[in-house]
Length: 452
Ligand code: PFF
Image 1 (cartoon, helix red, strand yellow):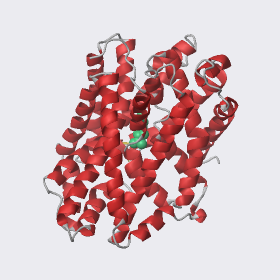
Image 2: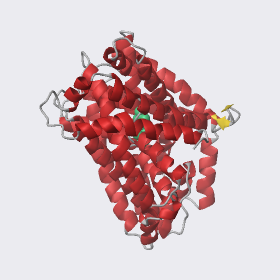
Image 3: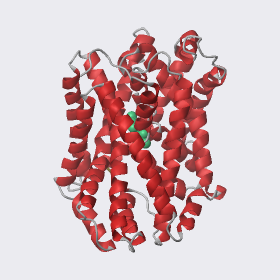
């Protein structure tokens, strides 16, 4: 175990760990069907616009706070605001990421169970069988809950190894594997007969589908996908070294994240179209539709279908794991520094809190569907609360803090690494965080309230 705060050991470690946080179920699962349903390439263009206009400036803002303060999220805001109540932005981020960790681990746990089930050949069968398999698994009172908790425990064991030997090492191993698996699956999927229909579905720009809610959808997806607004980026940046180029790192991470999202679409849709299956949204896509698709698409060579299915669930598990690691680290760093607990103990605190949320969320979509809040299952409630409200709020406050509150010289020094970089885009960055981001995010809230 490392002593002291720890830091990432290399530039590639910084990019892979932070990209690992960004790349997750949001890319491999949520992005493809959201893009496909909302205008394909037209949506992707809007999405890229959101990433550039709001995502990258938002990321750099969180990086600035974290790297300058070299502390957990709550302390970072505290240090930079001289004890003013901005600390609560850090608390908000810690709360948000813990809630996300709780419900995200439920789906991640399903992926883990499906990985083992596909290795054991248990999800082979006709469409009805695959559907029943999912329904009986997800409504079991014990199994899915145990898998979710198991996923948090795996995350826990990476976290206790520390920043460099845990987070960085895991990301350096998992991210390249993830990318290779994805490329193999994209090639296999695009070579199937009739795959072109799927490629067209994803990439054909249908501007008629664009509306204000689609734009908001793109914005919400961009925040979730970049892990913005949870203080995750702020926490990771506290492990960056002084020579990390913040703007360049944010841009590289955004490019990797977007590339993986688009490639995921090119993995899912061509295969689905080649067997004439309409890709649905929601959990049924990856747990009911796709196992079927793989079997049908590779029915001529069943061994290939078997391997593809294993690769697919391994991909999901790895993508989810690098993300849950980052969510866990936010709380762990907080408990370690604020309560002066050893890292191992604080990791347990975070594991137990997230584990409890995970258990209730899992039961709410399975055996105990009356576990509801405001008419939603607890799982959906947590999802909506974070994606629609807490993430945009966190991102907006980070931008306002960096844009308006902390001294401009501090911001410039961080942006330019104390003058070592030219920082030609500093003015553009400042304009984005001061004006563009707050206005756009306010519009999201007004839209949600039905005012615009
Ligand atoms: N960015 C992750 C994804 O796209 O799946 C989700 C995520 C990770 C959200 C870390 C928030 C976070 F702090």
